[in-house]
Image 1 (cartoon, one colour):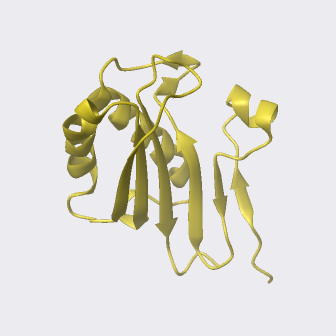
Image 2 (cartoon, rainbow, N blue to C red):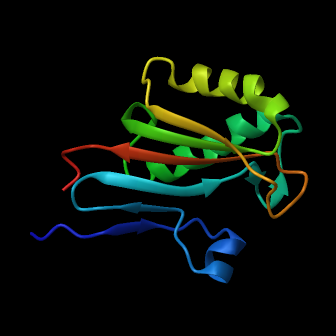
Length: 132
């Protein structure tokens, strides 16, 4: 059997509008999860940076779950934030979710997102060697 690239789509409106998948699993077991924000059911969920980070990571975890993976498979995270003042709150959310996993991580300050009420966006990469 030949291993194939597998794509996860969630039906989020921007997936069709901009032509992307929520996640892509490569034949070698690497999974790349697109940027996730705190948009749940079409609405921005969670007000502050901590809540938005938790919701954003949970969106990413939902994509991983569709590939029979979980937070324990995460090897890299990227957290994009709009304000330096949010570093501690977003970092606290990351620690709660990944303290036992300890993925490589980056936190980057950006000028903004598609909706100005969003203050956090996350990307996740996961790996499971037996995926192929």
